[in-house]
Length: 471
Image 1 (cartoon, rainbow, N blue to C red):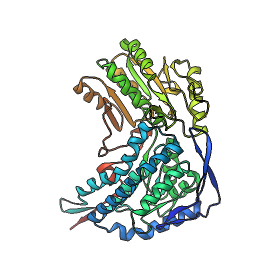
Image 2: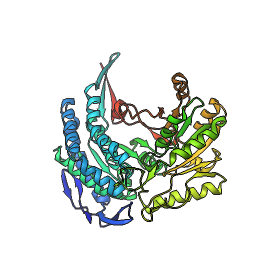
Image 3: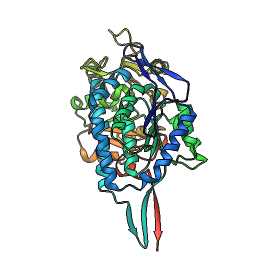
Image 4: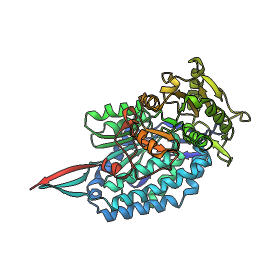
């Protein structure tokens, strides 16, 4: 049984002043595996004060010093990849297909940002003005449970590169992962107060960070509803915000696509991270004249997407993170049938052979209209909708007819055609034929998928303010 009873403030593991605790569960078995002590408002304020004290000195560090710091953080996290992987499997239920990418990627976030920093010029001459990119001030990061380690490392790496100190509020549901990661970061030996990590509830610690007058910048990954509240809370003090929010990604199969290659990629993009991903391509747009072939291939291919616990190397889809999330996904499956959609595969309940754990049957709906709630709302589970279209113009129209615009997918054989279509999609990223992740490219969304961008130069500049010195 795990007992996570410390938070990290001013370079030390300390006992939180808050008195609340939360239970931790193994989603593959539903068993309680530990408890976490939650920080409160006073803890958040102490962490902000520590970051504020550390800011003047850290903001004046050189680019070379920060690059060395980032390399040290990478080494510290990379040294415990196996421990972090085990924690993510236990506490989140992530299948090996996800952890094999997610944990090494989290460690590499620091090296990627070091490369960005190496080539970045903090001063430019513009006419008679010397323009200096200056750290915006103490930052707060609020991160979710669906890739806890990666979100913490990427936001911390960017803050370090910018010369900014930070307070991080991770999901309390990821406390075991956070504990091991914090131990890694502590080993890197950063100056006191440069980073602080406070477990706590979003409506307590997260809310305090969002409104605290000494926080200049908030970076948040999570739901659109919470992003709205952060934006409102930060308005009084004009906080700079980066919000990476929900998605309802179109997964467009073009009429020239090779279905043998395309359908596996469509399902991988739709069921990525067990469907608990803002970037999941959950709306499959298929050409009407090839719909029967698409449905046949989808039904065949989904049989290879095994659902199971992380100790099963063949599992492609893990459990939902909690009973609450399981119930949410089940309610949407029920809603789909009520709305008149037809089940191609899946449905309510657990997959055959799994009598415990928050496992959901991978579900695909057909006869879906883009105005149905299952096509418009983020379900955050392994539930996909198939929508037929007549031509490219209608495919683009359906793809863009959504409150979201985070990540879209195109599948076909004509590269020039896909590039032209990508330019017409209202989406922060467009992935062509399942292309791999590019950490230097900006990441963020149009419309209600967020504000601002992360990663690469765009992410770095989100922590900086331009100052013009005119002589």
